[in-house]
Length: 373
Image (cartoon, rainbow, N blue to C red; front, side, top):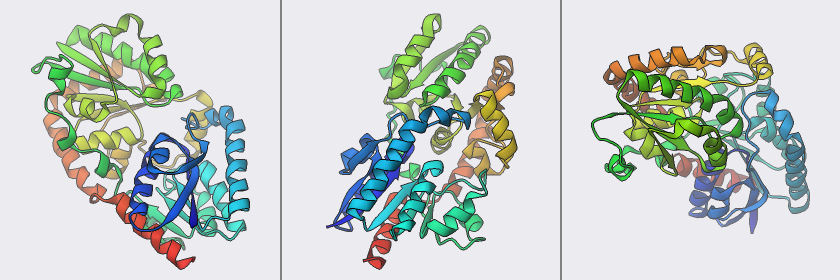
C-alpha cells in the first residue's frame, strides 16, 4: 500500500491535517505517517513525531525549540529514506516544512503544500524554495493564487478550511444560560491565545483592560482558554477571576455569544469573522522578535481579517501600542458601533470562498498520487 508523509507543526495544521486525512480515505487506499497531534492521530495517521509545543510566536522564540525541531527533522528524513513514501504533504509551518520539502525533492519524492506559506507578508526569499521544491500549492486565502501565479508555481484555491469547522448554526442558543450569564448584559470575550508565549504577554494586558472596563460598564466577561495553556492561565488570574466565566472546549460558542472579542492575531480573527463577532486584535512579542519583524514584515496589518478586507476593520494594538488605556477606549467605541462593524464582517466573510476546503484539497492530493504512481 502507498504511504503518504504529512507534516504539521501547529494545532491549526494538525486540525487541517486530520480533516484532509479523513477526506483522502474516501478517495484512495493509502497509509498516513507524519508529524502532527491528536487530530491527525484520531484520523488514522501514524504519528512519527508529536508536534505538541512546537508552535512559536515571533522570531526569537524559535531558538528555544531548535533541539526538538532538529529531532523532528531527523525523524521525518529517516522515514523518507527508509520507507520511500509516494508523496509528502506539508501543512503551513514554512520555516520547518520548506526544509523538509528540500529533503523530499533530493529523494525524488513529490511535494504538495497545503495552506500556502504567507510569503506575501514576509519571507519573500522563500518563493525560490517553493518554486524549486513544491510540485503543487494549495491556497486557502483568496488573493494567494494571483500572488503565486506571478511565479512558476502550480496553485489551487480551495477556500478556507475554517468554513467547515466554524459555523453559527453549530453554536447553541442556550450558551449564556448554560454558563449562567445574563442575557441582556454586555458580554466581552477575552482570548489570550493558544501558545504559552502569547498568554504570558497578552493575558496581563487583557486583565488590566477588564479591570478598567468594569468601572465604566455593566459588563460580564468570558475567558476562552485552550487546554494546552489552562494551567498558565489559571495561575495568572488571581483576584481577576471574579466576574469572569472561564470556558474551555467551547471556543466558537463563546466567540459567537460575545458582544465583542479581545483576541490575539492569527486564525482566531478568522473564526470571529465567520461568526460575525466584532473584535480588537492584540499582538505582543519579545523585543528582538518585534525588531526583526519591523525589518521583514511588508504589510500594514497583521490580523488576517484586516488583510483579507484590505483595510483595518478590527483595530490592532501591536507591541508598544498594546496599552490597556487605549484598548479600553477602543472597546467602548466598538460596543457603540457594533452593528456597523458586523455589516463589514458579513461583507468580508464572502471573500473566504465556499465550504469543502479539505474535500477539494483531497482531490488535488489524489491527482498528484495518481500522476506519480
